[in-house]
Image 1 (cartoon, helix red, strand yellow):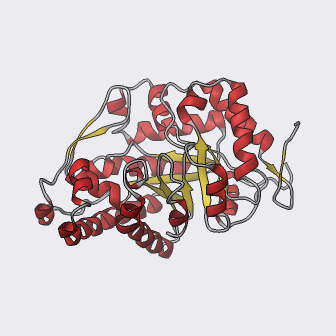
Image 2 (tube, helix red, strand yellow):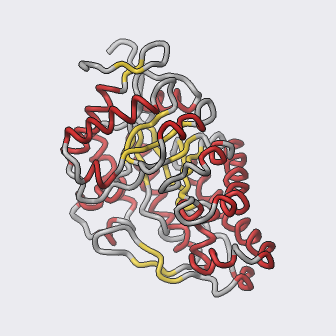
Amino acid sequence: MPGAISSLERVETVLRGGVPDRVPIHLHNFMMCALASGLPFAEYFQSGDAMAEGQLKAWREYGHDVLMLENGTVALAQACGCEVEYLAESAPVLLKPVLKSLDDLDSLTAPDPYKAHPLAANLKATRLVAREVGNQACVLGRADQGPFSLAAMLLGVENFLLALTDPANKEKLHALLEYSLEVVYRYAVAQRDEGAHITSIGESLAGPDVSSPRMYRAFEWPYAGKLSRRLKETRLPLACHICGNANAIVADMAETGCEILELDYKCDMPTIKQATRGKCAILGVLDPSGVLALGDPDLIQQKVREMILVLAPGGGLIAGPGCALPPTTPRANIHAMIEAAHRFGRYLPDGRVVEIGG
């Protein structure tokens, strides 16, 4: 089609604050890809070749604009020495932290992303996908967890959250967070070097569903800002993912300098639109389970339309699920979501959206 732009150009337009031809679409589908591969999940999530082929197969079927590459939430924790378990029907989980207490910080060493498992496998997946899609699509190579969430895993989530409440721990906590920041930064840069156009961190443990806004501002916000500034120097856009109702901190999140906020369906859409307008993009925010996995095409169309009418005007939206899709999400529902986003997400020159066929 004359004048058509590529998926990568579409996403880059959004990140520049511009208005593309239509709303870009992402899929947080790494567990769907694992199930579709036919391999045991534990094997799939430790194989760069398998993860790459799974993502490419899905991209060829759905034609989404952003391919999101990851193997779950514990890759950095495992690389730093934590014990993890690879599950039969889901993503791997943390079993045992590497630190017994904050007094053990000197035992930590920063892993080499190209040698530590499973980071090397994840980077191979990014490299293979980036080589295949070229500039046709946007590759988001996750840098796994952000400094706050990684620090929590290294110490043990319960121990870390309790330590935050004791002022006597402040110096050691910040030392742990600085270590975690360096680990995340190295992995993010490696993702860029392997072809990722964007990287992302997960910081759900810092969100209001787990931590107070005061704790978020004291112990997560400064490090998200540091990471964002360092990555800007490498020209790598950063997304930050926080699950749950982030209304109380979304304005703060928008001030970190992150180019994208990954937000989910529990957020109030007018609130997050107002907080991010002119500052950063929103990636999300559809309910991955109640709507996309368990809903029917009529419900999906309704929810996509509602999302686009609130979040898309003037640009700033990358549409899709607000968190990871369950592995058993019906393929037909993904097609319904994409068809609805194409229908309702077309832009007029002034930045308004027009309902094609509506």
